[in-house]
Length: 346
Image (cartoon, rainbow, N blue to C red; front, side, top):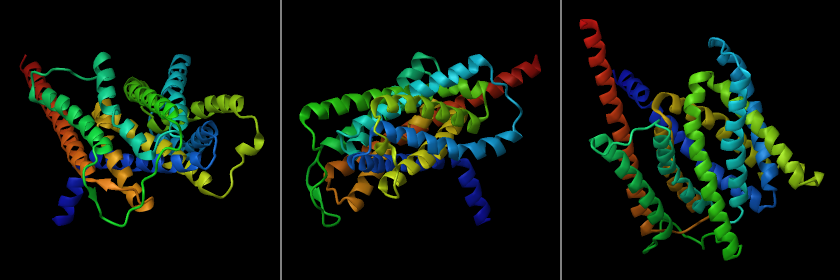
């Protein structure tokens, strides 16, 4: 009985668990991409190899797993939509992110990512993929949860307070660039996050038209690799910069390509299809917590009391968002059942 109960619980919460794994993957992306680019790797070349690893990783899954699904024809119009989605959502956002992270810390990059749920909610409401009613408890919870999550991210990052000495800490990593570069990096990071939030919303209609999720994300990664290659070749023509060695740079691009662009992208598409774009984006506040913990143990960065207070707000906001979304789903399902019964009576 215990095993059956555990399996049932995992089945009911597989969406939540999948999104938590995605946030762990993104926390690693912030750490490893920052480390590789700080070591001198060209950010545009980094994106090219990242997309190449993702395409190669997804190819066998797309061939063997999606082969069981019914054939979905790729019209020229659909290919164009996938190409534009790839350019706008993956190529542009990835290049902006990789360039901006050269001027900000990994933790700050994670703070910026926490704007994605609010931005996704805004874009989704504009295009009517999400409801925006504050007359229901579910709608209020989604609004309040978004605000708490964003507030918690800001508190986590900028409010210090007393130092919490969990271990012997050294000075935290500081930006080596001027204030002008720091501001430029922040603005580019915000732009990348807005584009990434828009990509979430783009996937909902694409998945409906082309449900083979592995093939869909593989095509987007392939198009992004091609697009990024053209851009990187125009920006960096020194062949020696393109060579990969058995070092941190190779591990970083392989990790970001295989784990983030490959596995995580598929999990996000799955969540968008099952729960909607806002649900998939609502878990991003966890990236900040995971990144800070990794930074503490790997780079000996200092943690302050404000960080823990921010974490409490983040988790509280995340709970409100998930509760609101689940409540809204239950109401819609009950209404559908009532409508179905009325139709049967008629």
